[in-house]
Image (cartoon, rainbow, N blue to C red; front, side, top):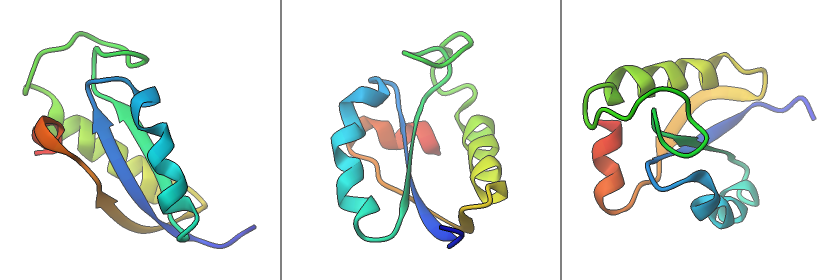
Length: 88
C-alpha cells in the first residue's frame, strides 16, 4: 500500500474481458495493469470511428494513469496483432 508502480496498458477493440487473464503476469511482477476498450467498443462510450481518435484517447488514458496515486508515471504498452494500431 502506498507504493507507486509502473503501468502496463492494453487498448483493445475486442473487449476488456478477453485480456483480463494477462493481468496476473504483470501484477505479480509489480506493475499496475490497465485495459481500455477503444472508443465505441464494448464498455467504452462514444462511436467507433476507426483510426480517428486513437492518439487523443491514448493520450488521455496515459495522462489519467500518470495522475493516479499508485502510478510512478512509467507506462508501457502490451499489444498484439492489429490492436497495436489502436495506440499509434
